[in-house]
Length: 383
Image (cartoon, rainbow, N blue to C red; front, side, top):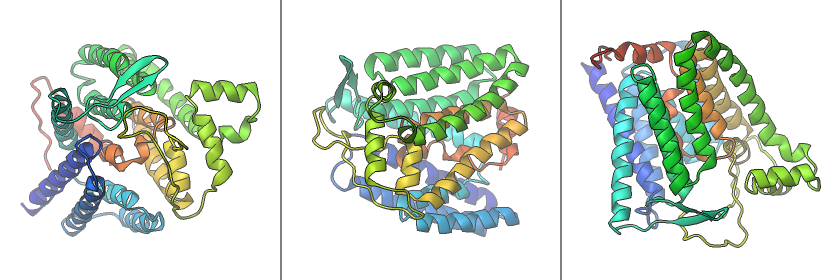
């Protein structure tokens, strides 16, 4: 009984943290609200971990990793990084299947409240312009914040329904992409959502092909991550190729060049002042500087030690799924990881909290999702 109550309490606290962080990225967030949410999330994550440790048994490997994670989070000098790792270790014994289902419901409700409040005029919308296309935030602090939540929500829905309703799922993902393109014009997030649809289609058409797609994608994503972090050191600042890539990635190379020119990675975390557009009516911002690449944010802001630890967590889960022939799940995680190249969402607790339950998981957790997707939709798995 204690174990059931403990896991339920941990799950409830996780959903509370999730909801609070979604609202913290909306126009409801004023003044010090973000700081308050950050502190509440941190305190709840500590309670979650304590409850998990007290009422569960773990392997020596898990205990060592957990202790290392605590040390690494301290060295990062970031409450956000500490919360991230605490949540990762706290959810290891909680039902992944139920966590995903509850998360989907919570995200949908939160986004609907924000969007409806925006349409009723309770909170404003942020309007941006890209290539003469208007982008709407629908109550979020920036249009791309909304699209990131939609991408992560789409990933969870794909995990739940790729076996039961593959063609309806593919159609829904394509429609979602079209709607996003019309109102938000979030190119990178849209391509990733289309990638989810492609994974579902390939899995339905051929089980053997998806295996080789998975293997190739693993090396491709790892290579792209490394390339994205070093491209400004490989391509001359004055070359035409640099100009082309900088234009293709909306000026991100220039910002990355400034990052390497002014800062250097350190073993432990460091503060890097940034000035972005979030929460502002679209306008030209003086001295605009922002690190979009999640991996560079981990490396420069949270330190080399934290970067190495979190990369190990991310890619070890992908490799574990691939080795156990769970290719759809592995590819979904790879799509999330590749999205982090051009977006800060993978490194920001307000958004990566959605996909944290997918990492640092035993293979049985994913297999239980498969077992719960029966024809009548009845869930047999339990704590």
